Amino acid sequence: MVYKRSFGNSFIEIDDKARKNIPNIIDLNHELENHEIVFYNALAEMNLRGLIIPLDKKYSKPTNDISFAGKEWEVKTVKTRYKSISNAIKTVVKNAKKQDVIKENFIFDTSNFSFSEKLKRQLSEYNLRNPNNQIKNLLVFSKNKLIKIKLKK
Image 1 (cartoon, rainbow, N blue to C red):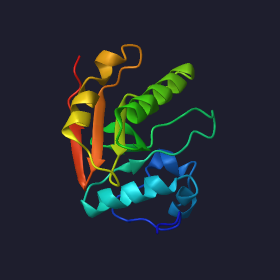
Image 2 (cartoon, one colour; image 1 turned 120 degrees about the vertical axis):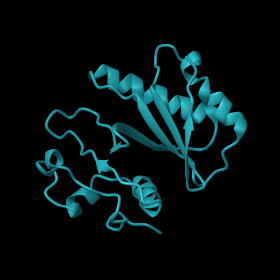
Image 3 (spheres, rainbow, N blue to C red; image 1 turned 90 degrees about the vertical axis):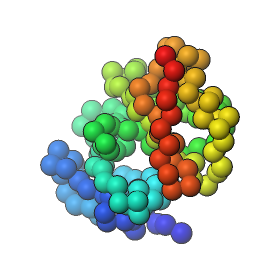
């Protein structure tokens, strides 16, 4: 079991901007959900690195969760069903737009569930099915692999 005060040290970093809100790694623990910590641990075990994006306490606007591979990403843990994933994307994108925030890159952690070719195909059609809530990048983390979903336009 992973608790909020324990997570891998090779993935978690705090940049200078974040240090204004988060003076040390212990304070960061209080901002993370357990599923995020488990996911970051898995990335650390794969020797991948990223920066945690702190909550926007000044303006109370939504923020993405991590900066990874040159992009800011929203991380979600859901069951591996198209409806669950698409609803999560739509909700996040809509709520962010209401506050003039862009959320366009998503990583879905499905490590506890199987990930099928059928679901991969369905997810590739997300933008076609949701023209008002389109996204740019979608990754699925399954069985210790990051799978890039090629989104159809």
